Image (cartoon, rainbow, N blue to C red; front, side, top):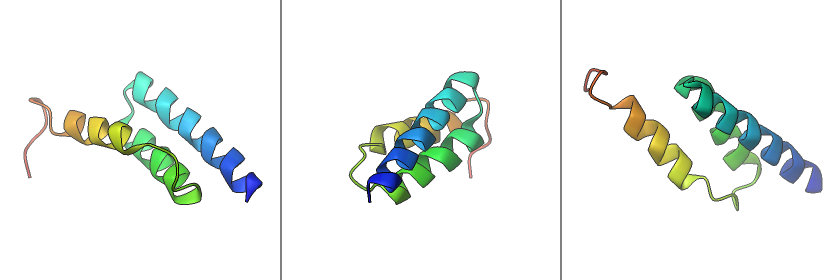
Length: 62
């Protein structure tokens, strides 16, 4: 189980870097993987932020 936590933290770090670079799809992919590996990670705020940015003024609404 410890290996999953290490991988989850690695994926979370990659996801945060992708967010900073403006790559929302990559960020969502890695943050979701991190949460899947370690559900105790508090990533709901990050996921909400990504989704909020995806629905920004420049993006079409579904």
